[in-house]
Amino acid sequence: MKTSTIAVLALAAGTLTAVAVVGPRLNPVPAPTYAVAAASAVVDHTAFDKLLHQHVNAQGLVDYKGFKADEAAFNQYLAMLSKNPPAANWPKADQMAYWINAYNAYTIRLILDHYPVESIKDIGSKIKIPFVTTPWAAKFFSIGGEKMSLDNIEHGILRKKFDDPRIHFSLVCASMSCPRLRNEAYTAGKLSAQLDDQGRDFLNNPAKNKISKSAAQLSKYFDWYKGDWSNNGQSVVKWVNKYSTIKIDDNTKISYLDYNWSLNKQ
Image (cartoon, rainbow, N blue to C red):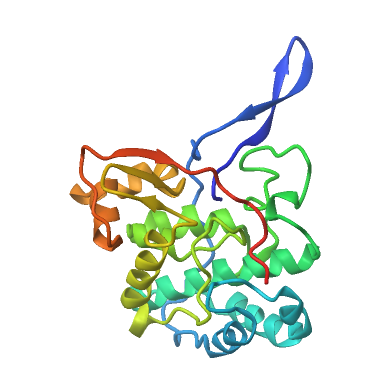
């Protein structure tokens, strides 16, 4: 879940009261426990690639009506994902590509299930209980016979297992402040190059990050996931400088932009 202001229920003086909470996820999401096959063929994402080419433009905006029109083909791809979870013999890049594509595809499926909608945050109960009733916590699909949520994929698998902060440039939660949804599927052979391209695109897009030498207004991603960006001797400054054409340093004043949750629609 891309964290934002969410509502929780607090017991105060014997009554339930809605309370606003702001900040990153505080509790870990357990990894799914689906049975991993000892060996199987890696999944082919060609069908998803074709749909993305047809219904996502160069800016990453989605023609959700187009996806609706191609719903049979889209559901066929999702069914294939559902029946073929990554196996122990899959190379790491194939596993990562599978889970990134699964996250993005099931996010589109969630929007289609509630379309038309103006924001992913409009889905579900008006009072959101963290880890329980948010759109990202809803277990609305199955992989390998286990009911799963988008949070399971992002926090329980990708962040926990692969330790590559570049995933934050690839996971798209159907919102305008998200990174661009690529109009191609992620594949093992191109994965590292695709993730680096996403980083360059995200950091140099002034709608997502406003960077100058003296001051950098960064995406909330760099605030929400500070721990990820500081792993392995890295830092927010180092990750920004890896992709931004304008370089910053420890003297640069860093602040964070408000997150635009409007739907990433054409």
